[in-house]
Image (cartoon, rainbow, N blue to C red; front, side, top):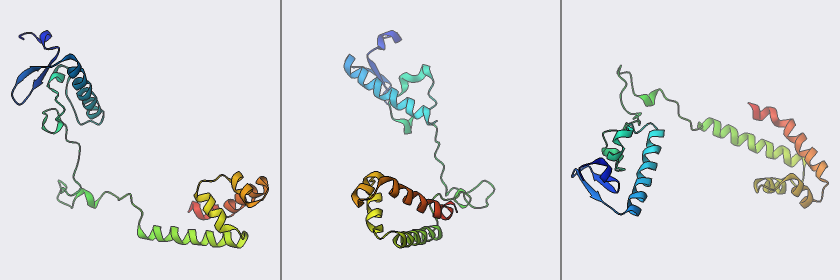
Length: 164
């Protein structure tokens, strides 16, 4: 095993720095797994392993010399000493105020729907279940075009509230 060509079914162990010969089937299975892992890590920018060093890849990325640490702690102090990254990065979660405003808007719209249609609870339940307007009209015993027009008119009347 002096030549690289003789290592076609061998796996290199970095800790012991030795080659281990394995069956063709096991080698293909192992090579497919580590290649997929390496490509995924390279796609995410976490691996910088060059083609001539692929034989060193054993799938243990955290201990690899080619591993790029792309995660950044938000608690790490900034270089200028003015706080942390977490102080300057906005949170994507909605604020309590916006949650309450959405809740109030939903209650208002449900109240207005009750005023315009006596079967509002049933319509809301069917809409939440993902039933189409055609099927809802059939269940309520109404014409589909009439029901769809009423639903469209209701949405158009209160769309300005949703745009804000």
